[in-house]
Length: 411
Image (cartoon, rainbow, N blue to C red; front, side, top):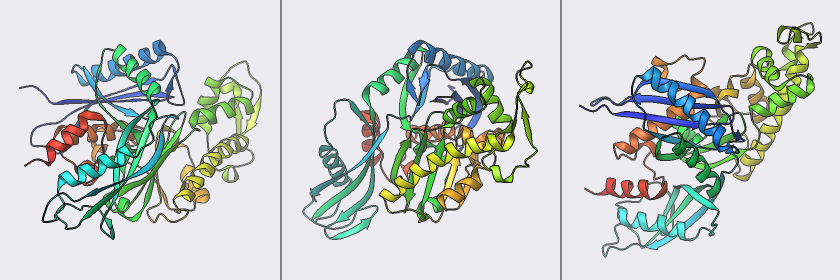
């Protein structure tokens, strides 16, 4: 009997991650078989800048995961992020079709299609997701599921996640050149949210913040649905570059110093705590206060938080998310980041842990794998033709998912 193998791929600016899992019949959870993490090459701010280098990095990551899993990997489910992502909204309005004025799944489908028609036509953009945030039946708004209700007019408010067509084509090209088929794709923080956020957090209001190497992407949930999202063009690699300039050393050494001695809270470090470059480059004699390093890290992170505050201001949610901020991504592991985020965003903050996968993973690296693990859960939901992944709300990703969603509505 053929095994049900699912593989996720997250191509970031700093690392390429592949996670291979198995879905066993009769079991809800996935079992992790292998994880492959390779240094990313040919990428800048999540965008492909060198096809050959990026393809090579993908191959390295997949080969490592295959070796550990002991199974072949021929296709992947892909995470999509990066600076090319843009977010907007659109509304669609239709008349209820049935004579008895009962709203059907078909009416919902037509309303969403109408919202897509109102989108400005950008030949250089590709729609990743259309996510219904809210429905309105006649004059009654705030409806999450209108099917079965009665009315004359149905209106839907959708969140649109788009990306550059060229960016997406280049990303696909790299994966295909690595000998892999792409099953489908999903916006990175939308996937990560499903393995680190609880239903209660999404209902109360929460921001999922993924701080990667080249960018920081986020998604805000309220009343169980995504209400806003975006990408900030600053990430961990910018911190590393600042350290290299500030300490007058090589970028690779700066990254090692950041990992070994990095902190976000200079005021809490002893003045006598010293970093010796000789520990990293034998011929170097320079020394620096660790507090100086922390000041560099803190300054760049404050840039990220300043941009995030502007995004929250757009939706009138500054200091108004009761469940706070949940951090994931490799840079989320920086010491003191939780306290700094609390100070800057002025909300509760916690580190996102993919609870259902912790049995087979090191907790110290689990937050950095949140996107890859989230893609696995997303893929599993798609393969079983369920809509539970979106909490009862539809996300449309190309014609394939659109058709599968329609099939899932049929008796």
